[in-house]
Image (tube, rainbow, N blue to C red):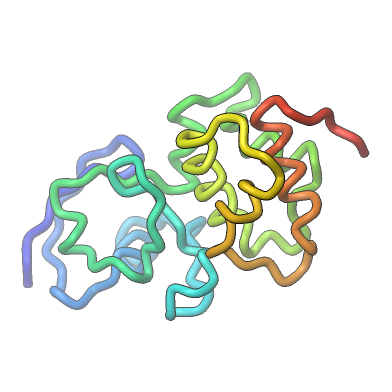
Length: 161
C-alpha cells in the first residue's frame, strides 16, 4: 500500500491505496464521485475526464499514486469552482440550455473537457471546438448540440430551442 494525499473538489483527502489503483476507481469507489464515469477502460472515450491541477486528463489513464499532492476537480466539484445562481458552472448551464446531451453518459467528460478547452481558448471556432473535444466520444447526439453548448458558454451563440 502507498499513502497518498490530494485535494478533491476542494476537500483534502489521504488514503492508503494499491499502487495499481486507477484514479477513476479511487474517485468512484473510495470517494463516491460517481459522476466520473467509467466508459471504456482504454482511454478512448473520455467519459472519465477530470481536471488534475487544472488540466483535463482521462482518469482511467492515471494511477491514483500519480495524483499524490495534486488537486483534482470532478464534475461534482465543478459548480463549486465558479457556480452560477442555480449552482451550475456556466458550461454545465450551457449544456442544459442547448440540450447538449441525450443519454448523459458522456456528458461529465464532455463538460470537463469543454471547460479546459475554453480556459485555453475562450472564443474557439466551431472547428477548434470539434478538435478540442476530439478525445471525448458521444454515441447519441451527433455532437451538434454539444458544439452549440460550448459556443454558447463562450458567449458566441444564442440558445435556440
